[in-house]
Image (cartoon, rainbow, N blue to C red; front, side, top):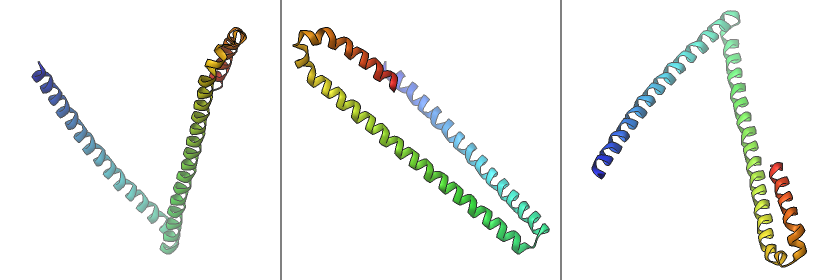
Length: 137
């Protein structure tokens, strides 16, 4: 019974690997042709700019524009990284606070369960507090 199942898994793995290879080749070719097309567009932009100005000015303008684009991409990545770090710190703080509150509640529960007044009023208050905390997140 295991042999047919193993053969089926083997055929399935082979099919998945084959599809992954063909997808990688397709995306690689698309990227290569896209980069060549972008290169021709940049070249055409340079030629048009050089026809409107001098070749030296066109080179300076194109170089400056690409440096500004690189700087914009770098700044965007730094802003995104800062946001990701801040969200991770906030998430960790929230998890730590939640763990502390849970631990404190579980520690205090046996002592509170001995009091009849706490059983009468504490349980409904705890349920209400839980519902309010759940809606806050």
